[in-house]
Image (cartoon, rainbow, N blue to C red; front, side):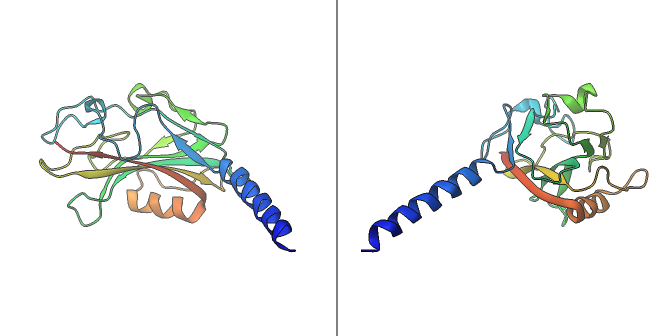
Amino acid sequence: MFRKPLIAALAIAASFASAVQAQDFKLASTSIAEGQQLTNQFVYNGFGCTGGNLSPQLSWSNAPEGTKSFALTAYDPDAPTGSGWWHWNVVNIPASTYSFEEGASNKNTLPAGSMEITNDYGAKGFGGACPPAGEVHRYIFTIHALGVPALDLPENPSNALVGYMIGANTLQTSKITAVFSH
């Protein structure tokens, strides 16, 4: 007797959940893919690696309500440093921005107001993959929707401080994890 209404209610709930899930904050790329090997164009040129050192194309959609800016990070948790390796940190990305073209860091085509932080190679901007030979490392590209228009950072902040400030102001994130070995 209650079976048909229960099935109908479950179907409606599942449909609603699918509609909500379809609106999730999403990071996408035409350059890199989840779980896939990075191509040589996204590999660092130095430290024993030879690559193009280009930043990948990235786009994001469905930012949560209240988003006032974005931050983008690229991090290798497998680096043998005890604290991982920051390959790219871009903060204060305007809320009206929803993509970076391939090579945006190298071509200086990031939106006005955006700020690239010094990576762990010691240079501002993107620094490509370069794990020790024979090791497979993960490269986690994360877009952070932030609830503030800009992070209050000193000149030349550390990646640890930037990570703290991003974490303290994040509304939602979306990630793509690529891999690389040579």
